[in-house]
Length: 150
Image (cartoon, rainbow, N blue to C red; front, side, top):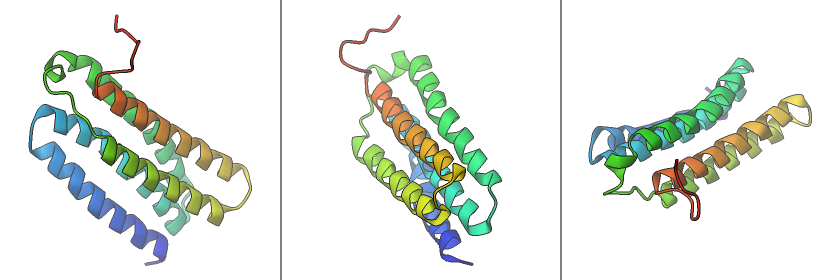
């Protein structure tokens, strides 16, 4: 076991336990936020595991999760809008913590990878993951000021 795999194990253990607790208990608002943050936990872990095992295919899985995870949360926010109207979730603390973790992992893996095409892919994954989760968290909290739904 090297440091990359150990970091992925610690990250998945902590964030996975928190997401599992959030999904298994509490009101609907907490469950939807936990589902969103589970994506934020698994995607950086895949990047760490890709580096640890030397498997670039894990980076492709991370790219897929960075694309589809926030989209799934936006679908939940749209479908559950009436149920979430009374109890709007606010998870800016966990969202920014997950964004910071994602940024730290992407920077560490970029430094280990070096300047090449793989680094560009890692930066795209980081931007999609951080931006997507911030937008999805904002959508869960009630949307953006001045933007009206259809």
